[in-house]
Length: 319
Image 1 (tube, rainbow, N blue to C red):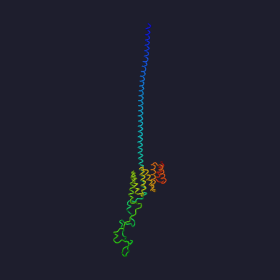
Image 2 (cartoon, rainbow, N blue to C red):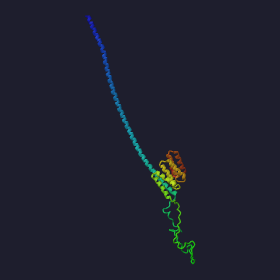
Image 3 (cartoon, helix red, strand yellow):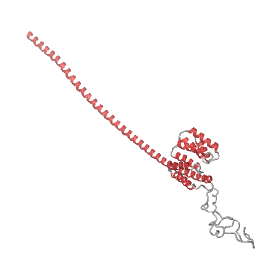
Image 4 (cartoon, rainbow, N blue to C red):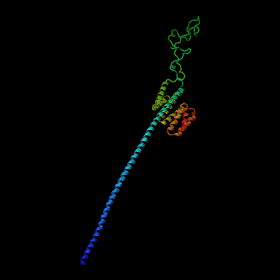
């Protein structure tokens, strides 16, 4: 009976061993799958967390960008306000400059008028050129000279003398039809030539254009005046206004040339100090500060008592 039991025991042992050997890998297989599932779940959670972080970062960046745009917009508005304020100030300054230029033009015109009166001499009164004051022995109107009468008259015959022609006396019947020709009176002192009226009109027209700010027309008018009446007492003033009108048009080179022409052609004119001042101003506008300073110093040295010299001192003190 012992022999049959042993084979059975051995079979049972073998069966247990086989079961144990098979159950180990199966359990290990189940553990790997679980780990894989957990790893996948962990990866999914990480992906979700990463997505949430990216969303939050995007939100923060959007907020920061929006805030930056708001700040930039505010800065732009401030700049616009500053520009508008500066434009207003510029308009005020332009208005004040225009008023100052107008006052300066009026002052120059007033000074020019006074200088013209000094240079041109006294003007004849209205109607003075066509009438003469009565003088002793002058012929009355019509040129008729009445014959002498009375015993005291020169050439009268004494009583009792023989009647006859008197030397130098008019023949009978000629006195009534003949008239003594009128003698042309010399022009009064200070009278201007016959074309003085046209000369004055041309000068006044050019000056009026300058007063109105029509500088091209003023330049052309004064140039024509100087060419037509180069010996006129008004020629130095006209040459000065040519340079002044060119300066107003920012033709600084032309203004310098015109004022130098005035100094060369009319060195004794009262406009020379103003011409030097205008030259110095034009040189300064051209950026030639050294030349401008030398010109103003020359003006002060040559014409220290002039009004232009006083202005030159003020300008040198400001530079």
